[in-house]
Length: 383
Image 1: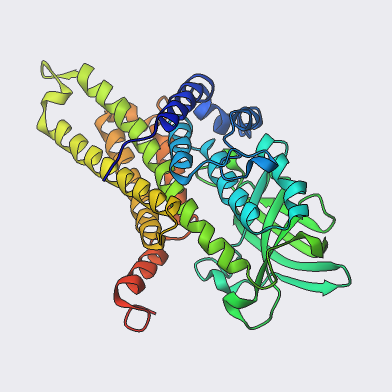
Image 2: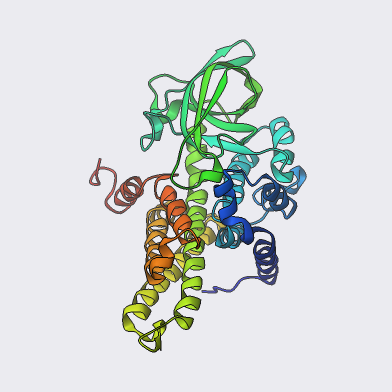
């Protein structure tokens, strides 16, 4: 069992870390406080190849493996949790289009996704179809050479800043997962409204709703074959869930690193804080959890690169990774004392940001349902 990175991966990792520390880290809290989208940094990340990792070279991509993609997410999220959405979303959407879209559709959208001139979001969740993703109601009806879309998508990350969306729609009534298709929808198409959410975290990402009222989309924008969209996104989620876990764990690691520096310098009762078990033991516990979860994430990504099943590993880390990260950041905040509770440090924003991804891409309860069915069988597991 070899846990080492290749020379190419190590070079890539060090390059992205330097870039992130220099150009991204100084602005983490700035974007939220200005209520501003980090558009300039999104384009810079694209120039570094970070929005093209899961796309073929023929369309401007770099054809990175899943482990390398994880390294990129980790390096960016360590410096700016929200900027890491550029890597995660582009990897998820880029891979889906790269694998399933027709050549004409790839040529139309993938080069722009890769060079950062196009930002895409994924629209699956609905007001009454969150955890039950197969209950999608947004409808696409064939009308000549077009589909006509009607419905609403909820909790869409990047809803306010994307140029286009990968939208999952009902194309076969009363068929649950077997009747869902995926369409690329330009968001400047007539009949689309955007509604921003007033979230407690992830604010630069611009989460919101997309409302479709008689929106006309060419039938050529269908991704893959009709009625197979649900299968496409579920496979993609096995990648994004592992990346999301790493995104959260990287924010936790940044918080723990800051805490280590703090407790090595801060004194109380004539001693540095790190010499007290009440300080060092909680730190050690959280660092242990973060490191173990990180290794489990890379195991899942390695399995994906080998073409082996990893749905179970993705579900485990999707519920566990953000949970561990939340507790680690909370512990770091407490160990900083009253200063940790202030906005002078980035800890409070990291805590709020990470909590959002305990929900996004599948709640802990849904991940545990997936796991229980894997271990006990669908017939004897929970329903």
